[in-house]
Length: 265
Image (cartoon, rainbow, N blue to C red; front, top):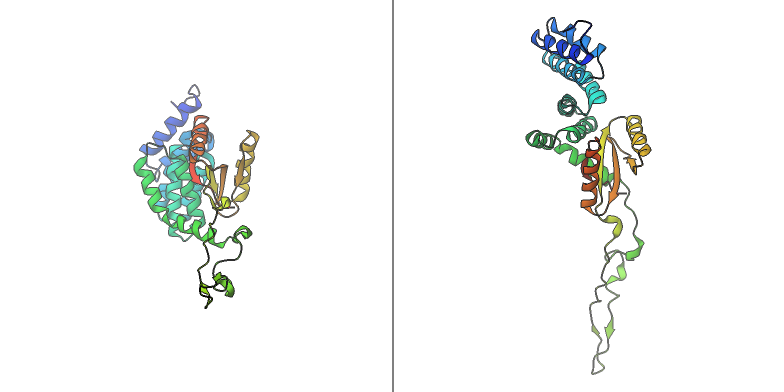
C-alpha cells in the first residue's frame, strides 16, 4: 500500500493504521509522524496528531499534549478529531486554571461537534459551566450605559416624598396628601436580547481577525468580540428564528456555527 502507485489518501490510511496497530509509543510513532509531515492537509493527519497527543498525555507530558491538541484545532477544527481535541484541551486548560483558553476550546468543540453527538455536547456544556460565570463577569465589568430617557432615579432624590401633590380638604382644613401617580416606564430597546451565529473562538485576536476577514469577503456582517476568548460572530438579530435560519444557511454552505445570545453593546 505504501508503494509509489498508491494515492496520497491510501498512503495516509496505511500509515495511520500501521502506526495505530504498532502503538504510538512504539515503532508506530514514526509512522504517525510521517503521516503528519507527508500529508498534513488530510483528515488522517488530524487523527494521527490526536493519537500522539493522547499518548503524550498518558506519559505525563501535558505540555506536549496541549501543543498537539492546539495544532489539531488550528489545522483541522472541522474534523471529528478536531472537535475531540477541543474538548480535551478545554478540560486540560481549565484544570490548569486557564479559564479564557479553556472556554475558547470548549466554544470550538460546540461549534464543530456533530448535531448527533448529543451526549458529548451535554458533557461539554456541563464542563464549561465556569465559562458562563466568566461571561457574566465580563458583562458586569463593562461600564453601564446611561439612559437619560427615564429621568432621575426614583430613590435618587431627597425630594421624592415632596413631589407628592397636595389637595386642600373640602372644609378648608389641612391638605390631604396623595401619593404621586406612577409614571409608566418604557422598555429600553438597547437592553433587549439579540441573537448571533458564532463560527469560531480564539485565544489569539489575530487569528480571530483573520477568520473574520474571510467571512467579510463573503459578504457577512461579522465581528470579533473585544474580550478573550475572541469570538467570531455574525449578525445581531432581535428575532431568534432569523439567527437560527442564518446558522442553518452557514452549515449548509459548509461553515460550522452555533446559535448564541449576542454580547451587550
